[in-house]
Length: 124
Image (cartoon, rainbow, N blue to C red):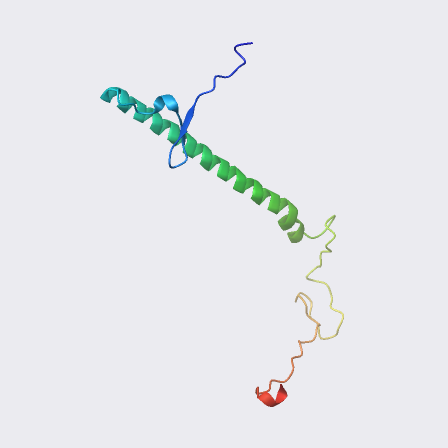
């Protein structure tokens, strides 16, 4: 029963947001060798926490991209069988006589635009 219980360790949060054990804090009574060892251990802990944070961000970005790709991008791009979007052949013969085979949207008339007028306030 005692082996299943975890020992709680008091942690100190640094100004940058890293969590280090309270036992790693430098004391006034520590010798220079102990201080150097603690600093090395603290640097290793911070490095591990930094890499964990980066890994979490990468996983989050990857999952959001996959979610977008599977929901929106993949359904829009594909056409043909089982997609609901019919596939059109480029060799389809156009309806009108002016259309050409192999030219997409041929046979449709050009867009008609209104005649350009010089803007004056009398039209307002």
